[in-house]
Image 1: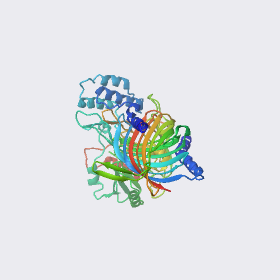
Image 2: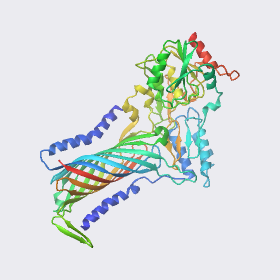
Image 3: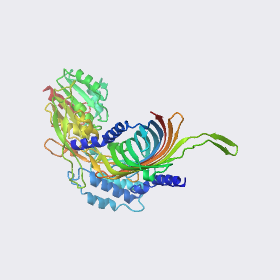
Image 4: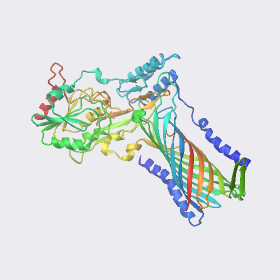
Length: 333
Length: 291
């Protein structure tokens, strides 16, 4: 019986040694530890050092010097947030329980969108179908569709209804201004409704090594053509610097389709997909780890996709939206 | 991608192929065969360094079904287990607000072992068995706080060497138990106590390669579902695996049996770049139906 107990004791004691077998617990509130961890994660995985000409080593020197043994959590947040914002990337956030850091690209440019002007003077009786606000313009010659965020689901039923409603129009205006992005699965779900045929529209590549220039092979970015109800007549897509992330991906993909025209200002950028991670103190971070390239392999999407026709909103007359007006002219001509 | 997918499919299903073959062979030589239904509690702990340096610990439920066969010279067992738990990050005490995050951890494990008796080490009341175990773990982790890296999926497959000691602790004669005012008549009972240790020999893992994010969903309806979830995954043979169990089995007069067990398992899967580690402690109750 003694041997039985010895054996049981050995088996149970095995389970107690997992802490010894695992790598050591890295949880820490130490400011320097968290600073080093975040700096290294960005260094190993961020995807736009070269495009933005960021010297990450010198940034470490500048912000590392601000860390001391007495650095408080508030101070640490400020230091880490400022360091991340040196990347000038709206996909970059530091999320603590008491604050979220962000770099708002749209604030670097003039605003080109006023919802009140549209609702009051263009579509006062608009319908809301799923995530879309829409109505006729110009005596039912044009359909106007507002999609405010790629966070909102793109319902197939809603699109079937909307595109059927405007099937006899001369053209559509799809307003994506101030659309800050969201779920990229909604990009093809929406764009394939305006695509006459399946097309290669660009490429993605993701960091895959510790050198800033280490990337995977290009992955093809295809947009299919929807099998059901679609609209392949002229579509004017309205964009501005507030059109970010998934909207930038949408805008870049439209360049492959002759029936789609971008009108307004350049998009805000955000061509890279952000990852997500956690610091040793439990705070959350995210930053871009991939690049979006156009069909020629050009890497400009992070800085914005330019409009085919540049038009600005004139804030002196709030009864008129010059960007919509220009889209109407393009369709009617 | 295609080659690694084929290899992955082989590795994942090798447990099943192996087990099916063994069961067919043993049909020729009937022994005590059971269908097992298992219920229990699990305490899991994991850390995926690709997304966090912190361990996530939590408790949950364990369920399982299985087939087992015992013969005088060998035994085999096939189990499919499901473990579901809610895990909290092991975050250090903050000066301001706590930063604890919750993750939902789902583990499915397919386990098969085939053991042979070592006569030279066995006695009347003690049986020593040695053999092999094949274990496949599929983990699905949902941690909404990790933004675009919310979902974590990995496959771990381990071929292990297994040692088992079976003690026959049956009560062969009737006994009267008298403890102060408590008296009970104890009938003869067939009981066994088992101790099992598994050590990983060949340890495979199929995990994300470097950056922890799939870009495949941009292609929407063009996306192949395998690519959607496993884009950039790589099959690697590295790391280690260890597990152990203590089992107490009491056989009923109707030939069925009841099993109480404590199981521990730990895995480390470095993959290509950043390590995933997990451990599970489980207390289980199994009803063994004689077939």
